[in-house]
Image (cartoon, rainbow, N blue to C red):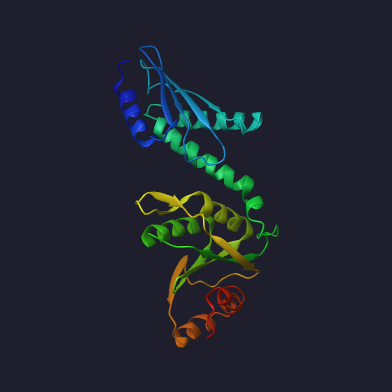
Amino acid sequence: MNNQDIADEIEALSAILCAASEFEVKSSDENEVILVIQPQQINSNVISLTVVLDPKSYPSSSPQLSVQSPRLSRAELQNLDTLIKQQASKLQGEVTILSLVEWLVEYCLRYEEETICRATNPVIERDIDNDYTVVAQLDHIRSKTIYLKTLNQWFRELDLHGVLISYRKWIFLLVSGKKDSLQLYLKRHRTRNVDVDSGGRPCRERMLTVLGQVEEPLDAGGVLVEVELNDSGEDWSTYWKSRSLLVSIYQKFIQPQTGQKK
């Protein structure tokens, strides 16, 4: 094979998709190059993408693509196959494989959120007409910069707003918006990287606990407001009592967790 664009793409893919079975050059000669890609970021749906490249004409010619998955129906696979080929057609003339892998991961994550979030978040009922506020407790935040940046991005994408409250060892997150958006958010928070582990590697939040919900929107004063409270009765009184909704949230959900009496 004598195609520098393909060689560069293989080098980049090998560096990025470095987990076991994520990326394989199935065959390579002067007539065709076959790549098999199974991104690890796609959580519950095992998706395999086979890419066939023509070394004589790529990237002027679009790659031949096929997707396989034992967990998707035939109709779902046909739809995904059509969509990714349409995406490849839009990128014709450019080196496209890494872009197509990123598109595939994003598509599958969105698909997963939309199809199973209701089952995994039963606290959110089916009524979608009103704004609700979900009260959640986080176990810890290792990198506040990364965590808050990620939450801000998700809140903007899903038209949500909220308050992150820190008090002693406890961290509470109040999130307000439409039911469908809250469902998608809770699923996303549990399945996507939001923090880093002790080694500095991106990690997911597996310890988020939903304490409950109230049928009322939250006046947060911004997309995501960060509040740090201490033991001062004045601080607690000023923050909670200036927002009527937060009084009931505090009494019903926050106080039982912290034992705060003020």
